[in-house]
Amino acid sequence: MPIQLTELVLPLAVVAVFWFLVIRPQQTRARQQREMLGRLKVGDEVMTHGGMFGTVVETGDRVRLRAYSGAEFEMLPGAISRIVAAAADTGEVAEQADAAEPVNDDALEPTEQLEEAND
Image (cartoon, rainbow, N blue to C red; front, top):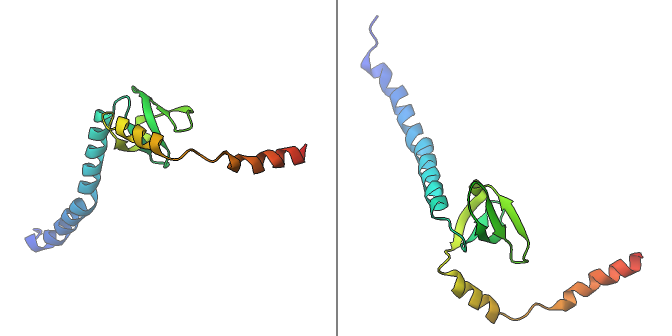
């Protein structure tokens, strides 16, 4: 019993649509992620998939980031979502941060008052 060509058209069309709507975009995103991680260098400002921002301090099998608070943490390179500012641009970002108004330290007082009240 020979298979007719018309019986193969629908399954092939479904596979083709699946390929173009699902697999191909995933491959494109994976390629873009690999290229971005290949460009990653010390001094780049990045955002992680968790929404944390930091500056790259060290690269390799693991990436060391310094948060704005000064804390450093290590993570796998795949956890980096995007480069916010390349190393050449961070000087401009730092100047903008320095020009910003200083942080109001009064916001810390209620916490200190609560700690004193609990003692």
